[in-house]
Image 1 (cartoon, helix red, strand yellow):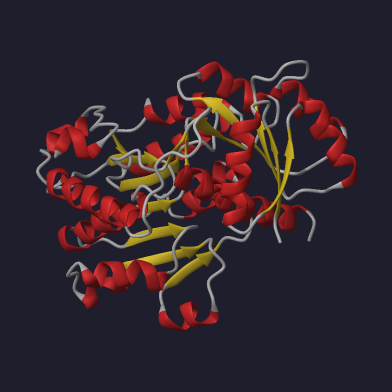
Image 2 (cartoon, chains in turn blue, cyan):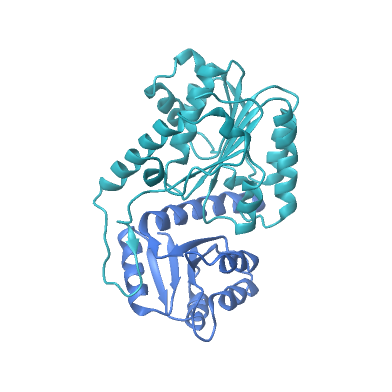
Length: 129
Length: 236
């Protein structure tokens, strides 16, 4: 089963997002902070990470940098504000693989997850045959 | 619709908003209007899907033999049996391979479809990649080739989209009309679409879109032209 780690400081949003992904058949791990996400990553190797940007203490970009510093190649999709162009640019500069704007459109989230998972695997297999 | 020579079209939009369907509709027009071969670099659809779509929209079966597929989807053996005119296979999805493909056909007068360019540009953050890609495109364009490529939203930095949009002759943006699939913060449950509704909505938009797109004057291709962010509202 594909494992997805969701990171967002809004517990209600996180709960709904988690339930939505579970209904889709994913194994979901929830973290309400960047710090908690890094702790989970010590024990779990997710196939994908959904990461909010605006979080207290460690924000999304700092969390992403910490994740990359561990040598992780897990694809990361940032959850960005709809019209925040600079946030999107910065997310890619920090190594994000894609972003999905909030408010989230369910179908677009699923499609983006599926596309990133598929294409990350293809590229990974090319790099490490 | 008159499809002009030496024209570059970009179709962009989120995944699942009908870019491939629209591409196939335009491919059908290309086949009926032009006699040249069409190189279809596909990383999204199998030939069964492409040709099924073309045949269902009334394209003559004999015209399909003018499509030269370059496979970036890892087709099944059944797919290979079905299509006899495969030009090449791309196993490594990167911008260098795309440039090599374009270089290999740059001296031929062919029309080219890339669905999707996103697969080749995924995880690429360099402006130079776009520049090099477009240099190849310009060369093909100067030979009178019609080129169409699709780009998925949300997979590239904003500057990549801006760079591509500034260089093409026509940008078509696709989107779904309704917001019934929205999940918002601090809301218990938003509107979940019923199983069939999304599809119905999508087809509805595409039909409207195609109908209106075919009314476009060919002069529109000569300048940068945005149709709309929401085809249903603006063109309906």
